Length: 329
Image 1 (tube, rainbow, N blue to C red):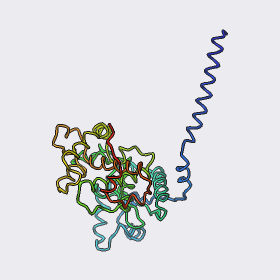
Image 2: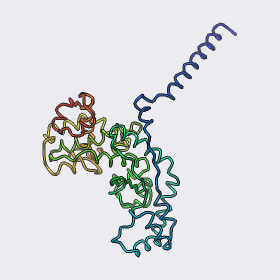
Image 3: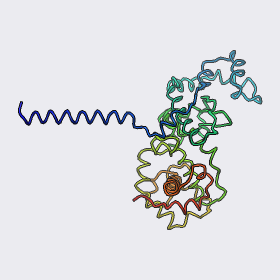
Image 4: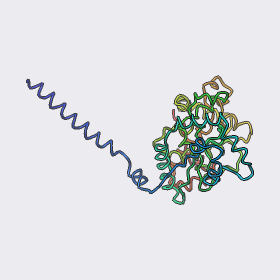
């Protein structure tokens, strides 16, 4: 073996040792904050009402009503539930949900991490009783938070290509996927904490949704940003690449303080695209106003010594003024 060969072997061993060291460090890469959050005791058990109901018959109805009273309002006669239990379409719906979500271990773990983060920032938070159900694809109520209950409609998360979703617009269906369950749950809990703006300005709407998304930043550190806002990767890339142009449009057209009722449908509400009335419209995703509000809130938190609790009650205009927001070029 030559000297050069010996040196090469020695160098290789050196780099292998370095790789191993960095590998071990990577395995313990969680910040001290995340380690502290991981220590918060939270117990999550999902009650699969969807499974139980799907496997039941009319003779099981008295037992179901006793065990799951929240799903059987008294104003509805038993005949409605008997009909649903015998409905072949309902049976198919339950089969598809069970095929997509055969077990709940992963979801329980993801919910546990979410609840730990919420409790860290808001110690008064109480872990809810979690139920999963089906809802005839009621996508306007995919997740329901009420008092100490959390209800998740699993038939709205079967995947965007599922035939049950035929006829529903693509800008909605793109988020009917399992990876959106936890961001949707986080959003509902954020809505419990952030007051809807009293002002009617576009800026107030932007900041409101920016606060919701910022809470997701805190609560879902491992979730990609596009999932937090409900964008595809391509849509999120587009808003990032066009942030300067979008912001210039808002400023130059004096939209921020406008109370025009036509602005939220153009830039805030879920939609196939945002309406700048320019050639870029067909390339843009909806909710670009929410995205910009998110960046303003992020900038505010980076540039001001404040707490999350103080952020939530901060006036939109004052927040914007102190944010020192500058769109990324």
